[in-house]
Image (cartoon, rainbow, N blue to C red; front, side):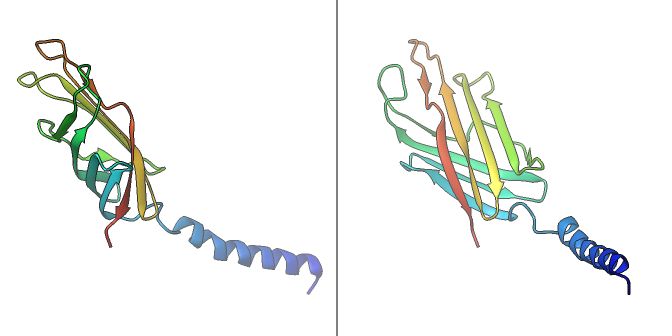
Length: 150
């Protein structure tokens, strides 16, 4: 067999073997339940990653110090937010931006996340107020990490 034909055959077979692996390779992230926290454990976060969306997202804050204009603390949970399923982009990214409805004190939460393998990471921010006395609270950007629950 001439050298040129042999090289072409080897190249074609190699390409044929590699294409299915690339086309059907491992998923960017693992589906299932994730739980995590920030480094200081003020924030707890949990969600379920599906193939195309993050759902059942919950969070809670435990007495985050010096986050209010009065020097006070901030704590709370996902109530009063109606958190929808969040689409997960091609690179494993998802984002929530929600505001409380008018019957509550004005609050806004932003959660950004990135899924990779069996881990997730992102940022969390909650702003609260102003209250009647002018008090406002802001967590600033809090970094979090979460792991897949096997």
